Image (cartoon, rainbow over all chains, first blue to last red; front, side):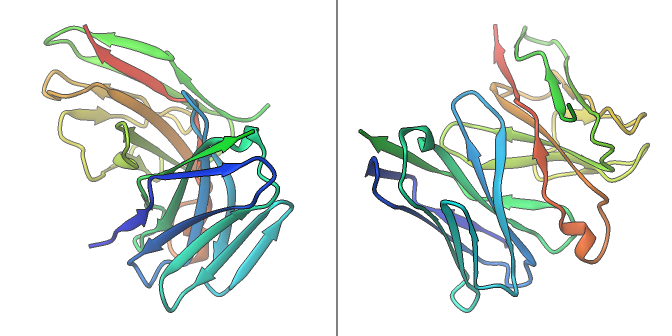
Length: 111
Length: 118
């Protein structure tokens, strides 16, 4: 069945770049999403990429998509302490509207 | 401001009791969703609704019920049949849910309700 995998933890120093990785299994996914969750809060949509794109950049965020390997990454440049949160990757399952989420990667930014 | 409002923020359930979580949106979105989040896990879909008066089961619907009498509202009832209800519940909505590219509009989330057992 469909599945999305992420590593659980990532720790970086303030000012460094962070790269959060995700693999997915449904090759028919047309959109892939990155969400951010701060403690006790809902999910905030950060960015998304259409499957016919390889890269999308939005200010400090860069999304790379390798469709052949079904690998998605989110790079955060100049990581700040306010970026500490859990980051979820999600793919849209090919029955319209339904999203499959990874387990989330907890990003810890140390000063 | 447009958004999704979930209430209450915290909720406690006694044994054998049904409780209802509220979700209201003023984004004029067609589709609404309920997810359950457990520590260290991703979100799992409980129920979703494409249009008023219609809804479908997600992956973990047992012990839950929903209604969609108005476009703006999608309440979730956690029934006494749900034996492990302690979790963080998230409601989401999106624009038109259907076939083609329009089915892939991003989902926007509320701030969640944390449900615990007394």
